[in-house]
Figure 1 (cartoon, rainbow, N blue to C red):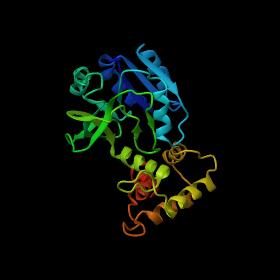
Figure 2 (figure 1 turned 120 degrees about the horizontal axis):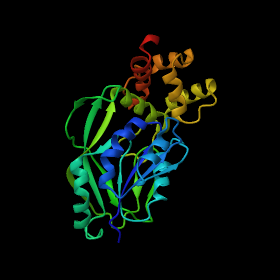
Figure 3 (figure 1 turned 45 degrees about the vertical axis):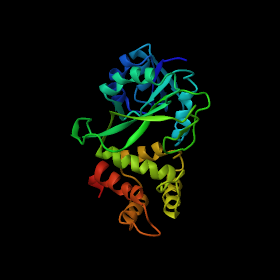
Figure 4 (figure 1 turned 180 degrees about the vertical axis):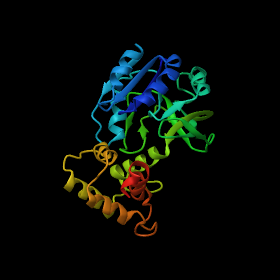
Length: 282
């Protein structure tokens, strides 16, 4: 059984994140597989010219993390996988621990999956770290032994099934989740656009009437919007149609009580657009 380590990242138009992360990882792994959502910022060219270890496959983003993650599985075939999004970075201690973890797994017989704790880091909008909160109590399964039966099942959240034996261990090393306050609000908007409300313990999103209202309004005005990144580009550009801005004002104070519970992601649209992107349009 192979002990090869492949670092995997799914990305779209985040070349600055890639330039931060890939150089820190490349010497600790045997191969890097990046699924690029047809970036227009030069990501693919930079990756392919950075190191012969890097392989780039492209797949059009369709608002499904499962589909993007399943794309990389087509290009693995053996060994262990270390998976991080482009706003996540394994610490040096984590990277140095990988070979020992593999050896102690006894070819996956003792365990086939490892989860590490998250260390959030907040940056300003230029990517400069302004706050390091230290490790939190959130653990994520990001290192595992590849099996041909593996498949991702959920559009929004990482949900990998098909482990050989299902055994897992928890390690103290951290990975960094590095994002700005603006990123937080954008991601909340994305989550709402894709899945609506994600209730505790759910396996898929719940799409209340407000979810349909916003999407129908946007699509009636901008019929070329296909995925969230299309709508996000409109918001980033600014001077969005007044009807949508009026709707964001209408829902920004939606009460968090039945039947409008768990509407944080919907309320995030107002903050994202009017506070983080275009305060001049308030």
